[in-house]
Length: 181
Image 1 (cartoon, rainbow, N blue to C red):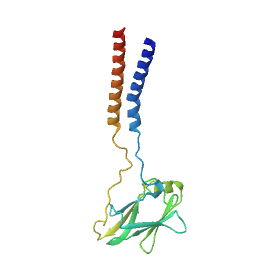
Image 2: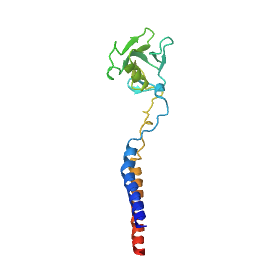
Image 3: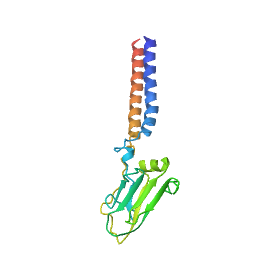
């Protein structure tokens, strides 16, 4: 009986120590799921550096899905376009091409998989430079829904408490058994 009790106590303590060491490590690597598939991510759309969801529209070219046409729909006179493609390490003429159209639209064609991945991952920002424009009609806040919740510390505390309780029960059972004999 003593051997059985020793084995049970050792197993409880091993599980307790495993819980204390593993649970915080698992909580640190948790990522919250993103509600929208990556393919549906929008580029960052801005007017004079301020985020918007209504003043700029975009759509894929009907004949080539790798060509995206951007159109400014807000108030004020459009004077130009900016993008962050070169800041992402992409090279104009190699990874993408940009065309500024007579109607004021801008067309970006993605030529390499790296450029397509930047689009699909939502890394691209398009900024319309506008004179005499008021603030965008619908400014947006950054979406932080993909960040993991801050549960690592709480999970660690709970796991540690359970481990200490299990160890205490194991020690108490051992001492009661020893007193009984």
